[in-house]
Amino acid sequence: EPEVTQTPSHQVTQMGQEVILRCVPISNHLYFYWYRQILGQKVEFLVSFYNNEISEKSEIFDDQFSVERPDGSNFTLKIRSTKLEDSAMYFCASSRAGGGGTEAFFGQGTRLTVV
Amino acid sequence: ELKVEQNPLFLSMQEGKNYTIYCNYSTTSDRLYWYRQDPGKSLESLFVLLSNGAVKQEGRLMASLDTKARLSTLHITAAVHDLSATYFCAVDVKRGGSQGNLIFGKGTKLSVKP
Image (cartoon, rainbow over all chains, first blue to last red; front, top):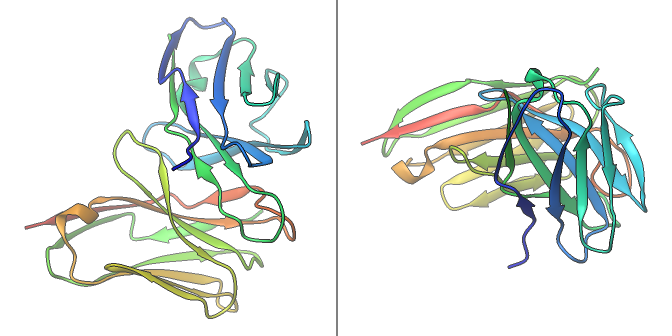
């Protein structure tokens, strides 16, 4: 069964460093998303991406965040200068195009720890 | 601002019992999703509810949507230990086209005890 895959599963970084989280969405999906979940809290939307551009972003997704689809398969989230409060589980998701209500499929997540 | 509220946030129940989790949301939406999350794992899609009165069932779980009341319920029938997990409802605020920005509730942590 197709699935969204994320790497790495766990990333530890020092405050102020740049990190890149990687995702391979399901191959025939055209919409891509990043969400984050701070430990023990709810899942929060960061950004959606379609047709090689951001279609929507939340207030959390400030200038230190960026997304990119560098090739036909990968979808990345970059955090330029990490802060302690960026520590969270980051989930990538993808969905098919067309028709309302197509569900998003989530990857297994990358646990980011900023020290 | 759309708010999604779930209750209860914690639920401890015995095997064999029935219970309902409630999800209220604050603005118009006709697309509601239920996800399950096991500890340290990803979000597994359970149900997609697309219209008023929609009811879907899978095994011991049944979800319904009342868009007029802005309420969805997840009913658990004859609970078993394997259902222990955190359940999230999420509302899609984007109209038309594919799924947009999902607003999640805080989740209901369900623990089923023998």
